[in-house]
Length: 158
View 1 (cartoon, one colour):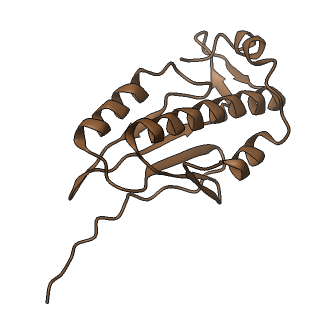
View 2 (cartoon, rainbow, N blue to C red):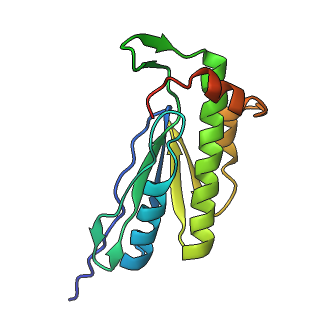
């Protein structure tokens, strides 16, 4: 009798304020290294940096990451706490979500990598539309005010 070891992907958390993602299958060490490098080099998003790890697997590397979407409040450089307007936070969270999904879609094309996405209880896969997750975070929200909102909160930590 022969046993075949399965190397399942790492788990994701159910958090309605954080987009979690993981590769469905293992990827080569070179591809994982490039994606981690590109993710790390990305400019700071609204609520924090994109986090991506590549733990070893039997045949390559897994990829697991997350992107915080909502800022809610923060401590400015002056040491004062500032609450973010809920509409501004939602607009910026939507912008961050869409940029992160674009990045994962790009990696999917370039590195032939499929992704599991999770936002709260919602789960989707890339390639494919992330429609339910986008609707949950964005609804029918347009994003014309992103630069103005970013400017209003220019004292936030980056």
